[in-house]
Image 1: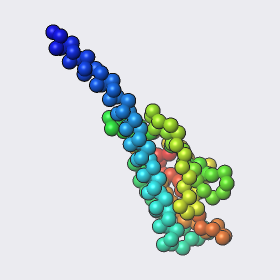
Image 2 (image 1 turned 30 degrees about the vertical axis):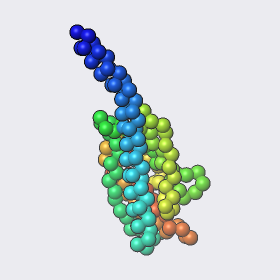
Image 3 (image 1 turned 180 degrees about the vertical axis):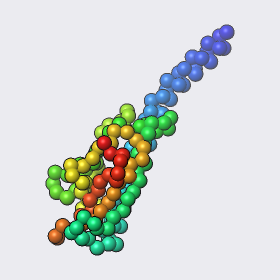
Image 4 (image 1 turned 90 degrees about the vertical axis):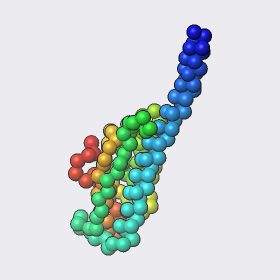
Length: 154
């Protein structure tokens, strides 16, 4: 009987010690997935700007990407908020996101001049998000416009 009680107590102690570490890893994994998706956006925008001619009309060179934003699983925290907004200081984009249990993270997309369509867009959950990149000529500067492609942004 004492062995059973001791085994349960040791097991409960190990579980209590492990749960915070598992949660930290879940949040870190989800943040890394969002950051990796943004790396893909910047790389695609850079390639688009380097390999294509910019035009003034909305029908310039374009690329569509599918971003895989984290959903809550046993190994990864879910996405709580993902917002793409114009940077207040010109043709740049700021992305803010928060995963369940984590802090709000902010990242500027400035590999090339990237601007969101309109006032930007917001996503409230993980999963697939298709985004469209379009290369435009703005006089002295080449700008890549970033926006949702079809449904998926709310």
